[in-house]
Length: 394
View 1: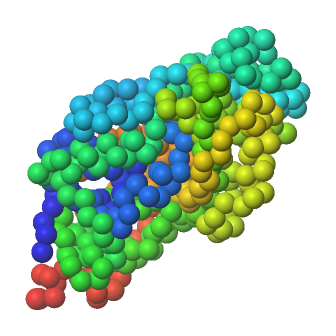
View 2: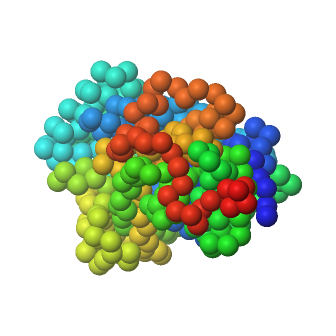
């Protein structure tokens, strides 16, 4: 039987960030995931858009997204030193553009709300936007600049987290599936792997993304996670068009959202559709629509080489807010980050580590209570198969 201070169930960017922060706090950590980093994190574009991704009625998210945006540069510097690997973090700002009058009106309404909340946005005339990005369509109707919205490369980020964890004697990353929680009375004390092997832990962190198939969850707890698929394209610019863009470009085309994210190596990431049809592959229609919308904003997209299409499920909740906080003694939730997982990961990691260290949850995180969709009951094991050894012996 393995023993760890903290077991993190889920090896996406949220789980890895929580594991690394816990390791930095001095805890022994085990991460369990059959394919670490191969879920939503692999498809993510890596926009750190606390301002540009803000949406009406999602004000509560600012309690996580704004501190995360401020924290990112230091976290990436620390992680790069620990891992010896680049994360692809770039301080380039985000340019938000509208393709037509109706899209501009919707964007202006949202921008006014952003300004009311004290978010930093700078309105630009179309000509000013084109001075920043000369490949923008001459037909764009409006724009604004979110100077504090940066980006990171999630694939490099995940690799850096894994390298930092695997390089420590106090951390283990196992390509395994956690099948059930283990309880000792009212407290979670570990997990079962593949239904047989047990890992004991003082704290278990659920960072399972779009999957919540885990036995032994507390009676009455509802974790209404739904998979929200996003189709993402990766393209490459020819030498004659490099650098293709210097900013992240986000836009609206006939009320549809589209983004273009430039990488240092010449890759351009275009996305992302949102669908809940459970189709795991990328449809030709999604590719066509994304390319059409991207080319409406940046016509030179037609000259890029299409090198990859990918779709992954992001964990959505009914109110599009995370499930973050303590579920029961020994059990913490850190999931449901929907389209914000990469951005929110560094701040959810701090919240998780604080709970592990016995600190009180911050009041502004109450909106993310993992019990908010449930009838709260006494936490207890739901099947005999997840009892702890001490219970079996008694």
